[in-house]
Length: 409
Image (tube, rainbow, N blue to C red):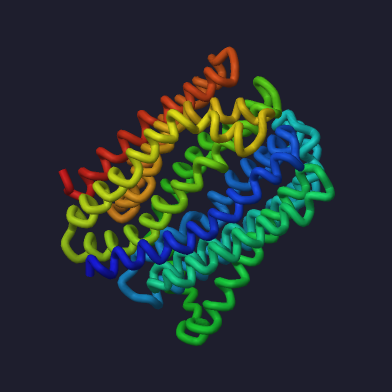
């Protein structure tokens, strides 16, 4: 079983590493085509899409891996997709009628022309997230790995292909193309293997929606606060300082998130399935928690230390002198991102133990600390330092609480 666990992780790591190679490879090209201001507008659009995408499924996709019966998981998946359709349609109506008002409310009128694409991005994200958890439940890690490669390649090709527009719309269009290709692959896989196995049962769907109501009522607001806290710098840096500072911060996240997605994200996909099985069977998952903790620590600590000392010069060398400030941001963010690397998989035990209120408290704390850091800072560098400190405190707390819930300490 341990051998299979490692094999599943390596499968996802292989796919994710190839997937991450595409954006990393093209970013030096994109930074010479698009300006920091273009990246700043793209960051604002992605912040809005990310915030709305948190609630588009009602967070029910997280419950797909929990039921003992596959038929129950199918009903939850169907319900999550239904919610996605409803919320995306409501968003479309709002954007069509209040486009300018929304853009003015976030103090960026120039983003108004991109808002019409928001319902598409949100809907694609909702369907993709739901089918990802379905494939995860069924241990189709090869499908997930291949999908990530295809999605990343589609995004990279689209952002380069639309580069002739020489503005943020090229970055956004490429993102949507990648999302569509990823969803298309999952839909094809689902229809080949599952579409005739189960039938929609409205009564059972309602019962399961009530059974897992903590996900929309507690985890929904929690993750909404989480994503607002994470995306607040992309919006507020541009409002409080300059739109180019938002572009620098976005590039920092784009570059440093790669190793987190590569290893931590792959570990998460396997950990949540195995930890859920152990918790349902034994009432704890201490063994897999401890093994995963030490694996992440040994993988993350040495590389984070090296990055801390060399990341500023490395970013300047690769992306060009105009992006040196992004290197300074990256150096400040390294400790926080290392702790996120650790906490990202391990804290999923909060969902398995159905202790979403713990997550709500953590995300509220993070949101308050980040906003406070942004508003009291006198320049972007001090703001980024405050953001890094806030993340570090919260993610350290998450690791400790998760260990207790797993009964590993």
